[in-house]
Length: 204
Image 1: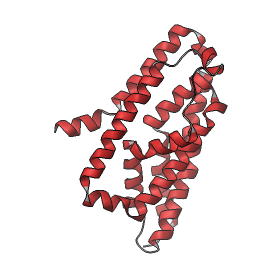
Image 2: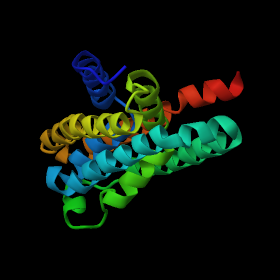
Image 3: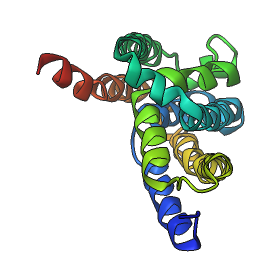
């Protein structure tokens, strides 16, 4: 089976839903839009999209099989990701007021930092594995992997931009230090809550 138009359209819907729904990336982009504005968040957005593109290609070209053979590697990667996510939540919770962020006292996540985060982001792995296992035909497999990764990237960038844009729109509302503190702690709590499936799996 080749990558037909119907299959591609079904995948595009999958990519849109998974890219635009809440998750660690979008939560951080919303907070970054509030604290740093849209323009300063652009490297963060590009890092997410490019890092995820590379992740999808890597999964498609065999990294997923490596983790099936050596599940301990995947477990270690997930817990490293969880630890890094907690660190990011702490940084968001302690972000300064909008005026302080504009003066450069704190910095948004860099392009490379956002790209690297995709490799320890549980939702990104689920999205990548789902895309490859469900929507990538075996006939012309390597070409199909590249097409799937490229389409995902094209849909992902505008989707994550929506979250950064929404955060930017909230900047005026959250200039009050008290409300900004509540918002940042709320975003940090959502990031920590995103680790619930990992915790539940560990307990069970």
